[in-house]
Image (cartoon, rainbow, N blue to C red; front, top):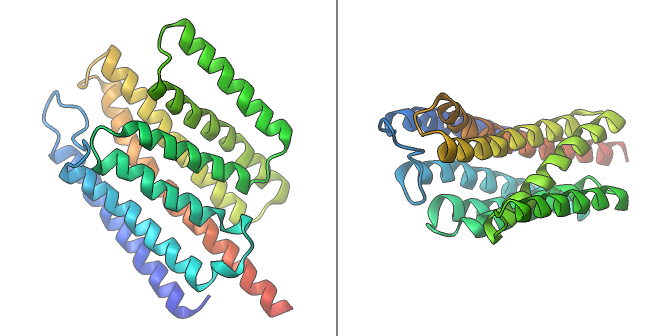
Length: 247
């Protein structure tokens, strides 16, 4: 990668850091006592959050057009996942009343990451079995609907991806797989915090410490997750450049 690429990456990191700080301050300043998350779809906070996702997408699009398009299809699944993430967060942050589509696209995101790690059929079978068990539990307690079914599909994919990512790194080593595993870990931290926040809102209250802590963790994990996943793609491009020089 060129010096220009490095400079653009540094600008991207700085932009993400500034947006991260603005978001964390805004979460506290714009939240009134007793109110839930002030970042409802279409709100200034939600738009500010979505700016980080746009920034991620533009950066990985630049990397793909300049370098990534010379890689094979599997190696370019991360840019595809970022494109799906951009769409998923549009339904979560901008378009009101379409969270179900957000769940659908996030499930596709985790499915793309699954194929990026070259899953065996045994791996896929475990995911399907786990998902069927969860659907049966939801049906048993009377909570089976489309929203919950899609949300749990995303959680199953993400949870298994978390284990697979670290197993993959243990077997192969290297900065690329380490950064990818860390990105998936932060991603999981975000989604589990959303799950805890939702349960706390229903069972406790929006002023309960469990809700407040979970709400704070969501984007505290999500932004680093996307940066780490993008950085893993950068490492792949660096490795590709080295291989070309050796050849």
